[in-house]
Image (cartoon, rainbow, N blue to C red; front, side):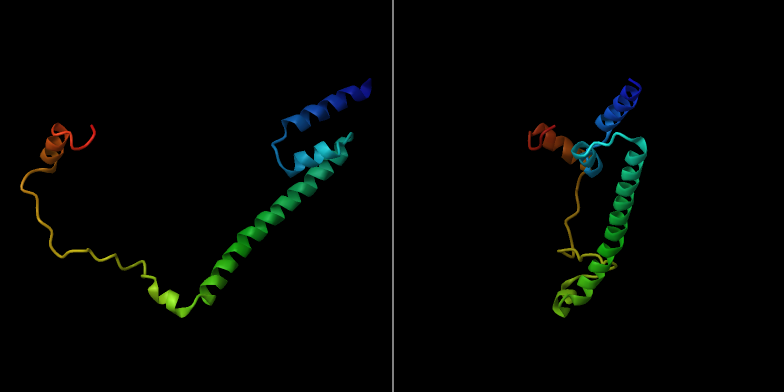
Length: 114
């Protein structure tokens, strides 16, 4: 009967886990010992941290490598970010009335939804 408290605690602990590789592992091979459960959890945390580390640093390296290996013609097509896109026309017709009046007339004429 003494083990019933531990078994009940482990059962509720497992059911409260967020879905993922650790909870899957615990469901496939349940542990009846808290020390073994802690060791298994530590291994999964270490694995997760390693994956985060690798994706953080390898993604940046792959992006830099892809930029270096891009054809020179493709680089020439890209516009530098510091230069804004030029406007299509050099001169636009100015309004003769206020913008609020234009909006009001458009609403009254049912040209745009309210």
